[in-house]
Image (cartoon, rainbow, N blue to C red; front, side):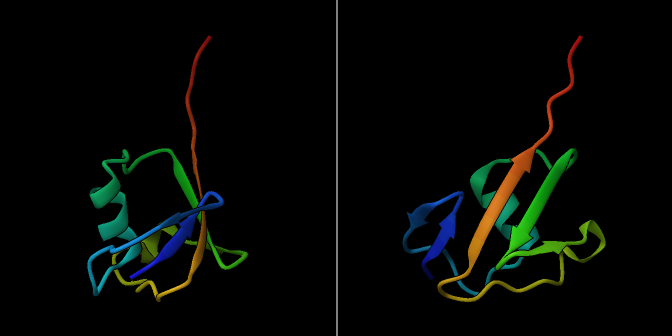
Length: 67
């Protein structure tokens, strides 16, 4: 599967793949993250059930706290 993540194309991702699976595959922290799929926000409550499709465009934002 090929996805566009933050404007970059990622090839040969495993199928089937959910948003949660992608987060794990990319080694991203599961907390403090927001994901937009094809210009629609994906609710955290649906990360495990939202299946990705070839050609999907994702924007992933990781929030970092500080002082």
